[in-house]
Image 1 (cartoon, helix red, strand yellow):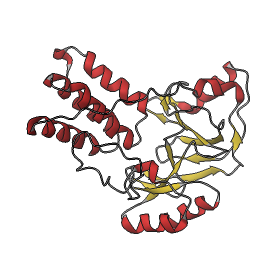
Image 2: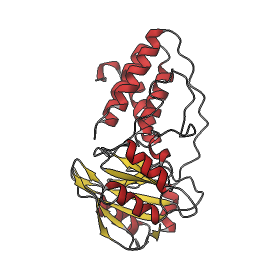
Image 3: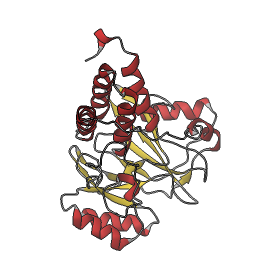
Length: 284
């Protein structure tokens, strides 16, 4: 089967999907990458392709058009946190001495709950994606290791790589084809985060040098390869704070760039905050 055929099959199950690359990133580049600094942020309102998870659709014709625009797509992403029965993804890593599967079991034991059988996807790196029905309307956001080592959560604004997708490390496959179960009630509070504060529009940065600094650093983040995103974000934020000129505005744009590639919003903000607080001598 082709990536489009796998994605259409997932659409038939009621999920919103979009094409991805072997790097597990959105396959279509942003149509706003050359917008001037300070331009309003678009999450797909313009109708064009290239807004990452915000392009995810349950319209098979639009999906086919997206794959036609990205013939190099090797897989697809499934949007989380949507609808009356929102998909909540629990990403359990098994690498670098961390066993997210075991950590998830310990977490359940700690709270006295039984983890229900549910759809489980084997990732290309040896981990698991477990699919659950999350609480409708609740502010479940993306998080990394918040629930425990190797346990990442994909909520509203996040996505999971779908089974049948190919990545640089191999294919994602169905490990257990159980019906999608509800996420244990006792663990729901651990996934909730306060509603995000309204963001102030990024101030205009007059002058060619400021504009060049912003575009250059944002481009550096957007070109991150697999496993490079957080390091690139930190490096770019360090450079922004060294300039002392509209550094907060540049950093906000860097966070937005990282989030557009799937980086959890709060994790991106923590990385930028670390760069701001790092002593100059410790910066890369």
